[in-house]
Amino acid sequence: MLNKILLLAALTGTAPARAQSSCDVLIRNGKIINGTGNNWFYGDIAVDKGKIRAIGKNLPYTGATEISASGLVVAPGFIDVHTHIEGDEDKDPLAHSFIYDGVTTVVAGNCGSSNLNIGRYFHWLDSLKLSINVATLIGHNDVRRAVMGRANRPPAPGEQAQMEALVERAMKEGAVGLSTGLIYIPGTYSKSDEIIALAKVAAKYNGVYATHMRSEGNNVAEAIRETLQIGREAHIPVEISHFKLSGQQNWGRSKETVALVEQARKEGIDVTIDQYPYTASSTSISTLLPSEVLADGQDSIRARLQRPDVVKYVVNDMLKSLKQRKLKHFSYAVVAYYKPDTSYNGKSIEEINLMKGRRHKAREEALTVIDIMMNGGASAVFHGMSEEDVKYIMKYPYNTFASDASIRIMNEGMPHPRGYGTNARVLAKYVRNEKVLSLEEAIRRMTSLPAQKFNLSGRGLLKEGMAADIVIFDPEKVQDLATFEKPHAYSKGFEYVLVNGQVTVSKELHTGIRAGKALRNAPEF
Image 1 (spheres, rainbow, N blue to C red):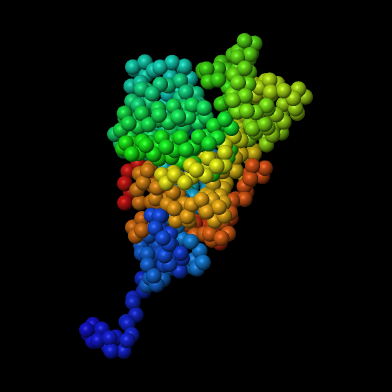
Image 2 (cartoon, one colour):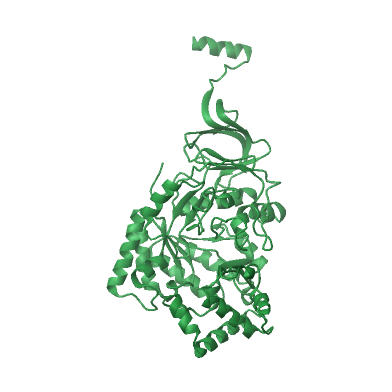
């Protein structure tokens, strides 16, 4: 009978109709960019039971939900490898700021700061259910603090063993690697050999070493060399976080720093970098002070800063750093959130100093910073990077994009706009308008490159059998709207977002779906 049907089809020039299969979601007629960096192609994607079931032209499927992607790009969901969501998960489980920027997976636990009990954290995430997937690193600062507090000294042999045991437990419980924050207390007090030993533990479980280096300014080259040494001696893949050049005196050095990374890769070190596409950073105001003043907790900090000799030392150190930046005032440091007095939010240290009725002198501004520290500190945005360096670093092919942000809570403080607009900004400013990157290359950096680096099995590509984390957007309309002056604004242009096969954004509106998973460092597929 089948032979007769085929013969009839051959004689009449018609083909037998293909049997229709059903699926949960069918995406039709999209411009598919699959995450490999290869050229786009037109096609359909069938999604079923949380995975991509089929990709091709004119798929013989019907979907319980069908999406017309005509005129739109269909890509893997974006993976943000450098976030700080801890503490904000239950403030907004829908994770609007990430979802509306096309992000479906984040890596937490960066800069040496993480949950210490990874197993318990994952269990809590599974119970909470976010709209995004979450993987995490184990943070060196929290490991060290659990064993040694904020002590400014090397660990005793027993303390080193305790730290290694904590890292090993975290890796067994599913952490994707070890992170350090070597400008933060107590990480800044550690030596390379301490970190190498901990990184070796993470390496046993196929982990990554991700680092906020000791310097991103004057001593950046030495910091990169230390990072590469750790990777070399621990035999562990390396991720250099938020790769940049801070301070006007360092503008133009990106050719030097990128060359160090390129040379290391030639030598066989698996080193990659990540970047946020802005010319300002954001961290604690405490980083303006010498690290030795910050040891042993807030009570100790307050006690030291009440001593005239310490105040003189701190002020002189801050003024020296300001002079190196070729600036006369602390106008580059803008308070993002100061709990004791929210009127400070969005104002520079220079402006706050004048608000307090003090003289318009840098020395007085340094004293204003000390006042803030006496009251618990503040988060701040620091303007001090070159747009040309940002672009040069962006062109480096083993560089992913990352927000370095938490889940943003609308209208809370004056945070860095990167928490709302990182990916949209890359696609709008640097791909569409300035053509620094091709669209296919930018998407590779947002998807398959971070998935490969952090062992996020089954994610980062549009391929049959992979997790159905998918973004559908208009490349001509996608746009970041958050600015430094008005940071609370969601990106636009992401028409649909699927997380684990569930439609989480439909026609640019969050559906309320919370289909994210805790991603443990173990194969899922």
